[in-house]
Each structure stands twice: as C-alpha cells, then as structure tokens.
Amino acid sequence: MKIVVALLVFSIIIIIHELGHFLLAKLNGITVVEFSLGMGPRIVSTVKGGTRYSWKLLPFGGSCMMLGEDESSSEEGSFGSKSVWARISVIAAGPIFNFILAFVLSVFVIGSIGYDAPKILSVVEGYPASEAGMQAGDIITKMNGKRIHLYREVSNYTSFHQGEKVTLTYERDGEEHQVTLVPRETEDGRKILGITGSSNYREKANAIETLKYSAYEVKYWIETTIDSLMMMIQGRVSLDDVSGPVGVVSVIGETYEESSKDGAFYVWLNMLNIAILLTANLGVMNLLPIPALDGGRLVFLIIEAIRGKRIDAQKEGMVHLIGLTLLMLLMVVVMFNDVRKLF
Image (tube, rainbow, N blue to C red):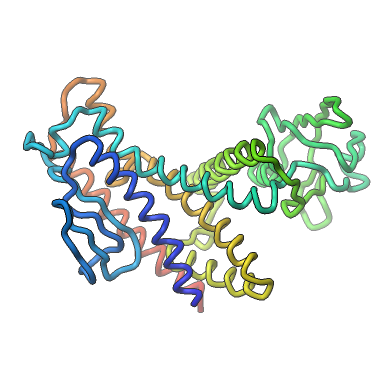
C-alpha cells in the first residue's frame, strides 16, 4: 500500500507539472503530439483531438511532447512557429504550476491545523538569548534582516548559518526589540543561540491568514531548496545526504506507516506536507539553468528574446541531449545510492 501511495503522490505532482506545459501550449495554438505519465514503453494509450495520451511502464517522470519542439520549424501548430514570448510562457508554465500546486495544498494544511508561528517557547539559561533578555512568548520577526514568518525559518537559518553572529528582531507585547547574538558552543560541539521553539506549535488562521501563510509556506520550501543546493555546491552535503526517487518512495512509505497508527487524518496531513515539499522542490530544480531542464530551455529562449534571433535548433538540441545524458547518469548514481542505503 505504501508504494501505491508514494507513486500516487509522484504521479499527481508530475501530471500537474506537465499539465502546465500542456495548457499553455494549447492556449498558444501549439500542437501537443503526446501527453504522458511515466517513461518507457506505453501500457495504455489513446488518441483524442490530435494528441496521444499515454501511461508508460516506468513510474517516474512524464512528458508533454510538442510538434517541432526540438527543431526549427515554421509548420502551423509547431512550437518553433510561435513567438519567443509564447514559447517562454509554455516552458515556464510547468514549474509555475508546481508552485501553484504547493500553494493549494498548503491552504488545505494550514486551514486544517494552522501555521507554525515563530514564537519562542523557552530560552536556555546561560546562553546568548537568555543573557540578552529574551523570554518565552517573544515572536521572532527578523534574522539578519531576513523576514521570518514561520518557526521552521528560524531553525533553518541557524542550521544553514552555523556559528554566525545574528542580529535578531523580535516582538513582545506589541513592541519591537533588537539584539545581536553570538552562538555559544554546547558540550556536544553544537553552536546555539539558546532559543527553543517547535514547528509543532501551531496557531489557527482565519481565511485571509490561511492564504497569506500558505504563500509563506511555498516561499519557505523554495528558499530551503535553494539553500540546500548552495550547501551541495559548497561541499557541505555528501552523496549520502541526497535522495532520489527510490529514497523519496522509502520516506513516503515510512511516513505513511507511522501516520496510519494515528488515523486517516494524519496520513492525509503528512502526505500533503510531503507533496508540498516535493512539488516546490521540482519547481525549483526545473528552473535551474541546466540543459534539458525547463531552466536550460528558458536560457536559450531569453537569449533569443535579447538578440532577436533564434539560436540554431540543431546546436541547441545537441546541448540538451548532452544535458539529458548527464542527468540520466546522475539519476543512476543517485538511485544506486538510494538502494545501497536501504540495505
């Protein structure tokens, strides 16, 4: 059952991403040759309105294949026959739909259990926060000028900026205060400010607040993905810390089994939270300027818009082919590492 749930979560996220490309293609009069879920040989396939809709064997990925997408073509209905701005809108729609899905799912979660307010539940005696006069009940609003809306942002900031001095702004009884804290090392080698809170502490939200904090939720996951990528580039994350589809399926399965002990509501809630994380992550990753990804295609289109002339389609296609090959190799390495960690 847990594998079915995991594949369902993946499938919904991928369908929404490809649906973004599909709808904008149709809106701009581009012929969609095939809209598919999965990769490899077709299991089920049907043709309607000139488009083949397919469900393929391998339960990862999906595609929205458009007429003339990777070639220079002026044929009516082809991707290349449309204006550069129409093509940009089609390519950008996939990641944007991922962010829209993350927002919609966040509305369900926050509407059900509220948001994790950045409220201090306690301070640790003998550490910077306590010595600066901070107290339980204080609400953190900024860290080094960065606006804080959720407690997880506080946790992430301290994790991604281990040991750094922080100028912290907080509210108490409607008044704003500011302190500068220098993390202090604990006996186990960690450097902390001495602030204790919890992402499980939730405050209920009205309708307007639900929409507002749903947007903050999406922003949080986008920023977390970007910060994690920066840590990878800086070599602060090892291969063992990276998970691919197999690892994610494993996490979803474990979460499903643990949540099922508490009832269907918690299963639903935790699956939504995982889906928010994954769809926001997919949106960011697809916008990276890497050949074969949406971001790589957008780079070529933006260059075309600036110079007023399309780059040779064969050269662009070769770049994307090389990028796709490297991505597939990376996927194999990550999947092998996922399987190794299971045993």
